[in-house]
Amino acid sequence: VRILVVGATGVIGGAVADALAARGHEVLRASRRSEHAVDIADASSIRALYARVGRVDGVICCAGEAVDRALLDTTDEDFATSFREKLMGQVNLVRLGVQHVNDGGVFVVTAGIYGTEPPPGAVAGAMVDGALESFARAAARDLPRRIRIVAVSPPWIKESAAPIGMDAPLTAAENAWSYVEAVEGNTTGVIVRPG
Ligand SMILES: NC(=O)c1ccc[n+]([C@@H]2O[C@H](COP(=O)([O-])OP(=O)(O)OC[C@H]3O[C@@H](n4cnc5c(N)ncnc54)[C@H](OP(=O)(O)O)[C@@H]3O)[C@@H](O)[C@H]2O)c1
Image 1: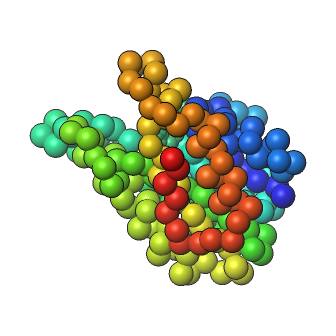
Image 2 (image 1 turned 90 degrees about the horizontal axis):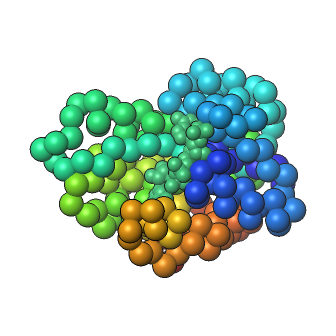
Image 3 (image 1 turned 45 degrees about the vertical axis):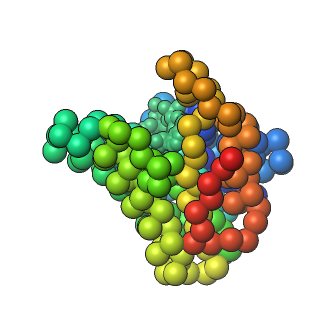
């Protein structure tokens, strides 16, 4: 099937794009600096991307920054950035994408473990992860034409943890299987927690 992967140059999205391509799917790789350029923080950029790529069977988002700071250090701008990029960027990718997704297609958004197991110092990121999980559950009730939506909530990924001296068991390639299963399966409104 034809799948748009936003964040395809990243740790998580790169592995997802590679895994889908290895399964024989047609993968359109998007990000701000990819062949298919898009800034998900800008709705007009999302509209332009969909107009360029045409119809797809699935849209996967593995992009969106959230600012991790402690409660009393998180500024208005930190909250606004986190909501604009990671939350509304992905929400808008779904809202504006529905008319471009074929019947029975699928959206996959990326939340994160902070939504359910926040460490100290991650207030805005945790809020956004929780909101994305709620969004997926709710949007599944409203999506037309058997279009599905799944939220993947990854734990720390080995390749991202290593540079900051942390150990994490799950590799990006292992994590990518949850996205492949979301595309090839038939679930909707569910939260997948890899590993
Ligand atoms: N890695 C982890 O351990 C982990 C764990 C749980 C959750 N997550 C979540 O998973 C998502 C991806 O994480 P990652 O570690 O793979 O990040 P990453 O390696 O920094 O990659 C981010 C990707 O998103 C693209 N991107 C960033 N902002 C964008 C925007 N406004 N519009 C379009 N594309 C944009 C980047 O490419 P360009 O620079 O070309 O735009 C890149 O392809 C994040 O939301 C993160 O919070 C990550």
